[in-house]
Image (cartoon, rainbow, N blue to C red; front, side):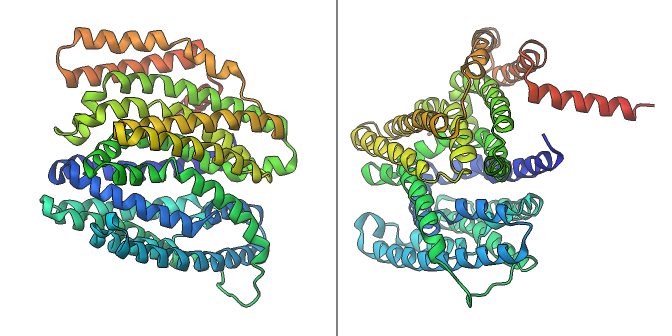
Length: 483
């Protein structure tokens, strides 16, 4: 792994973790102050706003990362790509804003939360100027991380200063929206070092079809991801939305590490595909898959057996309805981790953009059907099952497509060999629960023992190549600096 990839991975790992860890510093406090119903209102409204943001962005973010990465060494070409994509973004933003305002004042289920949605409009406006896709394309992850940490710090302070009772729910949502505003302002100011905004010589027609294809993928994907919470809110009530969003909180922190690695690898994978370096790419994919599965298994087992303690720790009493959905969702750590490798790293980094449309169509159809059948009857649990079913369908189709069209294969041994150690992990957690009477001590002891067992297995028995290489380098450095 090159030094630039390792540095980018480090910065993007910090960035992604901050996106979840900082809210979770405040979430145990906010969940207890606002209650499950008010938390559900905020998440229901935010899921609607995020869908409109997704529509406004279409495929500009994903396509923009790829195209900016391809011309990052050519300032003139880079400037041309940015100006065309930003112009198209303005057009789609105006359409999304008009539709959102009309729906806010006409759709009965949305009129009830009019004040929240109007605050959310501010988030939609400033998302236009949130151009992380540009900085990801030029691989300036250090800047993105520093900016994000600073803004998240402001968010944490603001929550504890201004949110004190359930009556402050709207203030809490406004503070959450403020993070997008500050990030966007900072992005736009910093971008002037790299780009010159001009709409004089544009050729947007060249970019319309690619961003529509990428957008088609992202919008259909949202039917079983972003819109899950929105549909849950329309079909049931804000309490069920609160259960579902609580069930996803811990999961999002864990998946953040894999998301960070996936994001920094997209420009590199795109270059490998365009240069025809299939053997090198296959080797890298094998290593990533093995590490992903090896990491996922102990985390999933820990969460399955400690679901009650985890939900109680992060949300407090009154959120027991989130425990079973959480047990379903945690399996997505492995499923979505593999998807990120297959779809984001391979399919979306290749020029075969139509394949992403096939994948997203399968996921969307599965998600819509399952949601219509299960969500009204089972509430948050039905939404969790629907989400899981969609992701499994996407993974299955993705595996077939990368083999058939890119010649990339996920080796069964990289998936099944790490699963041979499931019994060891289960024995550790089950034994700790039997021998240690205090629930919180159980959690701490089992977590420590699982971590130790993971290192023993992957450094000495299974010898994961990425992990052993990392520890070998650190060990050599220590020996070099030792007197």
